[in-house]
Length: 94
View 1 (cartoon, one colour):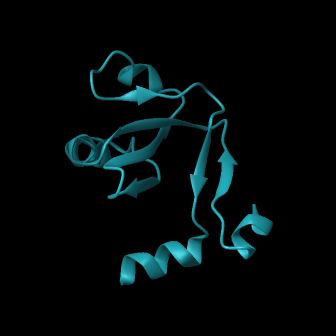
View 2 (cartoon, rainbow, N blue to C red):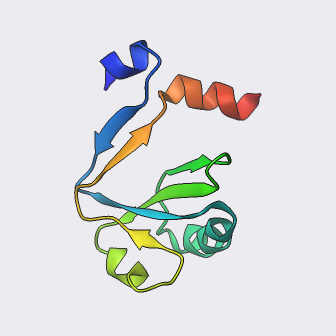
């Protein structure tokens, strides 16, 4: 992970505690507004160029999202390409 970030690449991060959900960016905002107050929303990665968002939900709650039309629930243990935390903060500040 660190090696990828040091060379300016995205790092593939795997998690067994979280499940990756992929969805179109704007509809994701509506879902996230509902999940946040319920304490069921984890970290989020968004890409305006691809109009996609990838967010993390507890693996225990992932079954709540299967079968919803615009969402893709990735298999448990799937990876997520992520910016280095410092690059992420700089991108958000710009």
